[in-house]
Image (cartoon, rainbow, N blue to C red; front, side):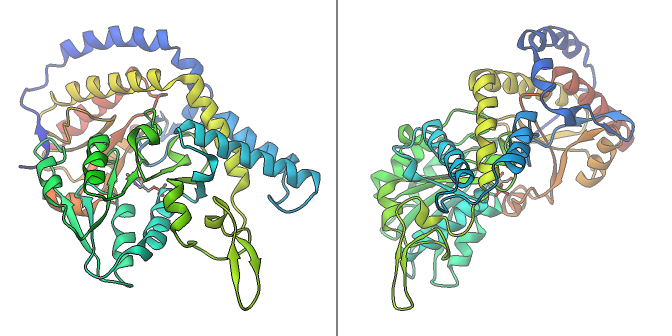
Length: 432
Ligand code: PLP
């Protein structure tokens, strides 16, 4: 059974409209205006209509303080990091390393040596696949789930060029929740790693990763968590989870593009060989023999995006000021309200109805093609994502080519949700 839920009732959205009046008040209490005015892009018009940005899973928008930090860095503090005694270089280094300490505290790592800056979740996972991959042998197995993003599938397949690695895949039930019995049954003496997303970028399912990590550890297997869709929306504590690796991207959490984080337990990072070679990651180089730098620099070859890293600190300021509790509560309100209203639209099919779900809604309407639905929404100023969402194996499991995906961030409003519903009603009527 596919994890979708189909609309059963015909159009009467009266009750929903009444409910929205109450939720407008909740938006006012949260003072969303103060949050929204930090994001100038939200003032934009698309095809003459107010922009309604519902593609936050792909990337979130960026508050001015992050943009200003980038500008400040370029105009006052641009000198390469960890390169000598010059004042500006030291200032830039201090800013980068302060962010590293902050990120370590943010996710409760034991030390900043466990925080490696990368280009994004994708590179973080590739790093583990490449370096941890050295410990794997022909015939070893890795457990993934059917809902993984390609970023958590293809790197493990590339490892297969060096040795024969078998991928074992956990299926989902009708709601888009992982089949935990199947998960437990996949372990055997060849299992060397579990790599699973914290939150699905398509179904919105929040996976029971603490339980999954405990199961893996009971089998002596380490776990990598792809946290790309979690860290923007919820507090993550890597030590409480006992994750061995945890990967995420700054651009999905109100930060700059081109920055990612890989958290890794020191015991693994110390054992693992470097990922790339170059400047910064060495202690001593000769043509005969090279020794590597201490953690975390062993894994940071070349000049990092120190401008972006410094600006990431300001994105964390934004989240801290807004508060994860407020973010979660507000996004949950948007999710439940929008889902209930969508389910009253004839022909609506929602993919992913997990009990624990993030504010991501993947859907199709009747026989409408996802691309056409997305185009029609765009003419009304509504930016959603269409396609396979870099999760083709999941699409195959669902028996579809793609979906339309609407995803919320803390700056979205109930008023926007109402406009989105109204637009969907018009689209549904056109497709009838
Ligand atoms: N993993 C998940 C679950 C994602 O949703 C994404 C991006 O959408 C990625 C990994 C890849 O992130 P990035 O492109 O920032 O490396």
